[in-house]
Length: 341
Image (cartoon, rainbow, N blue to C red; front, side, top):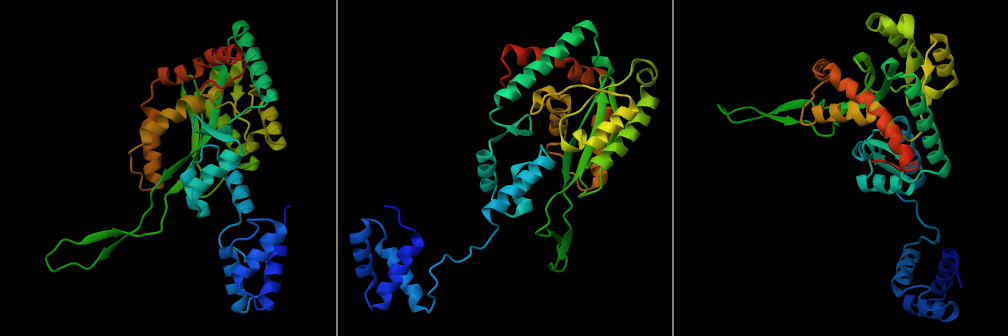
């Protein structure tokens, strides 16, 4: 028989008022409601609380962020940045990294190609992947369009901004510098667009700024200007086949209207498919390897390293990223929509 905790605590309070000992109260309660209903240790703890003058039988409010709030905040961060690390989430919310992992696991999310996606796709997700890949593969056989494709995505780039202070030292001895505690790495959002020839346009957003539909439409205007200058053949004759993922700023009504104004054809792209997004499986993978081990002290240092990375890639590097798409479409169809990674 299931007994509510509050009821047992009221009964303990009754026995306390009768002047009985905690062990006696626990024994009587277990005799009526069954063994293990309440332990001697629990009874003693509540008797001690009653002796202190606190007769409230409800649990005291716990310190820290509520679990529901944690989950909501974690999911909000993941939705705004599909590449975010569990360490960054833990630092921002001031909770343990293990807690973040547990919540994401319970939400059914897993990282594929550094992107958070559902661990198990629904049947509809699988069919959408197959249908989209099949149509793209058939179209490319009839009308090769990959060299008309412009693709883009966003990625957070972190850098350290630790202030340093001097400490007292012995006369004649070397001065010591100590990193100021409590300052975490800052990050800037890299927005980049490219095609088989190379980078067309990229921007670094101000620290702390996130992407929304209005800002994304402004970026598309600047991207159009860059395409007119760097890829006149696309602007004048062939037309742009535009590829983007399914992030909210990319699929809003405002963005769709903007893309219609630009006259670009938007390539169909099934959701939760990092293995079909060239920026995820190609560009960002190599960029992360390039930045690993590099200490970026400022936003300017980020920009300098990005310039090095982008300018040191030859045309074949970007060509490989775009031209690998048909083989990935084929594998999706052959494996019945299962993840390939």
